Amino acid sequence: MKVLRLTPERCTGCLRCEIACSYMQTGAYQPSKSVIRVSPFESHTSYAPYTCTQCAEGWCMTACPVGAITINAAGAKDVVDDKCVGCKLCTIACPYGTMFYDTTTRKAFKCNLCGGNPACAHACPTAAIEYADTAMADWIGDFARERVSYVLAMEGAR
Amino acid sequence: MPVRHLIIGGGTAGMNAMRTIREEEREPSEITLVSAERPYSRMVLPYYLDKSIAENHVYTATAANLATWKVKTLIGRRATALDVKANVCTLDDGTRVEYDDCLIATGSSAARAPVPGADASGVHSFWTLEEARGVLASITPGSQVVMVGAGFISFTILNSILSLGAKLTVVELMPRILPRMVDDIGAGVVEDWLKGHGVAVRTNAKLAKIENVKGRKRLKFASGPDLTADVVIMATGIRTNLGWLKDSGVKVEQGIIVDDHLRSSIPNVYAAGDVAQGRDLISGQRAVHAIEPTAQEHGRIVGANMAGKDVRYRGSLIINIVEVCHLDAASFGAWDDAKSEAISGLKKDRNAYRKLLFTGDKLTGAIIIGRSNDIWTTNDVGMLKGLVQSGQAIGRYKDHLRRNPFDVKTVFIAAQTTRTLLPETVLGRPSMAPGDSPVAV
Image 1 (cartoon, rainbow over the protein chains, first blue to last red):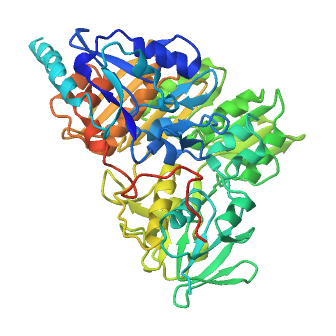
Image 2: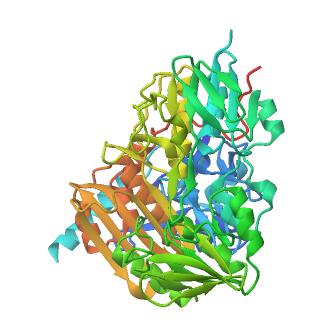
Image 3: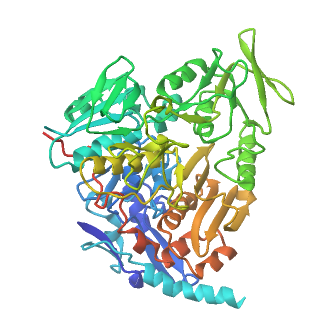
């Protein structure tokens, strides 16, 4: 299965992925509606994108009481809007924190790999986000550990 | 001769077991489902109550689905006795069902406060679909509704009652609302929010009796003024449906005692969901977790084991979330463990509260409250669950959380929680999509 491979060292924090994602997912150019999120590190001098891992368990999918989360043609866990009642059980079941809830539509939403043509990967100018045939991994953990050590050192110095 | 599986109870646990048997089995088996009601999801009843979904949306399987899954159904029947020596279950119409192995997943029923008038007409429970229909039929715009009990169940229907145009008062016996879901500070945040949204809240209110007064209800309390209502909803807890197992030889304490394969004291009798007293992921002790996610995981584990797999269950995690008037409140694991180290943060002006409970450098419980439109609330809910579920050691990042209990994401990522979580599955294999289950022929 093709997955989103994230290379945080290449991320410039330009947020084009968030703009593209929100437009693809909701029709609005609105980073707050994006299901890929860029986090700043080291006082906004480095950045890392973060999104759904399309995990093997599919905690959101197995938790849904009405079978509203399924697996789409791209192999991504995908919310079926007509079935979702907005009970939020998926938001609490997903251990990665990558479920979202739209207060207007009262439905959950998440990364569905844009059905196999992910807008974030297309929008990324530095290939920090690639759509690649590879095993899923913790792409940003090592990067974050290194960058956060600076923050911790500064906090400790206070 | 094919193996004969008997599933008693058509709720979340039973239906997940049924589906997983069909996913896992090598040889086609016979499945019989005994269920007092047509299978439906209790989780979605609040959305039936607020009329955002039709009644047919609540059902988890149609007769056609069940036929496709080759399940023999005995709907509308209740089990009344289990003979574990003869491997026979007797139903309320005298039918005897023989089995090779069976699952007890008979769930819970609503319990009412033991006061005079509690069982009179006009006093409702909200647990079954039938009870939901009763509540829906009784509320009209402008109705005065009193909800007795300020716990999870009552809060799941709070929005629905308001959206029907009713005026709502919530009364609670304990000193705080949501007494089994959040702590005092958290309850205060939610209570302030509710009052700001026009919901009357009364705590320390011991109901004494309910009287009929000219077609309306008058609620009398041990102290304080009476309340008058058009509709009374009793959300005063649930009771496991286990009475019928008396004298069966199946060992029962608070629930049916189950091992790490969810077998009861009788090896070919399993239990799952609200009736099972199984391993708690955090404490390692046996506990009854009468919540939807536990029923789902229990059901799938039992289904796999009934199908001949050897699947151990690592234990269930208490997780609860409820939204009232666009304020989210959630808690996880051992959120009320007095022995753990607590770090908390309160931002009153944003109605935001976090409480993180640590045992050593592992997060073993958490409470999170925040506005639904605060974007990080929803994501942090999941990451807190991930930290508790994974048991990830967060080492020096605990100091960071002590300074800023709201910066969960940085800690989640830097502690490499994703690495620990990625291999985790309930059944030891990737889950199948609903509807993708292979059908035995």
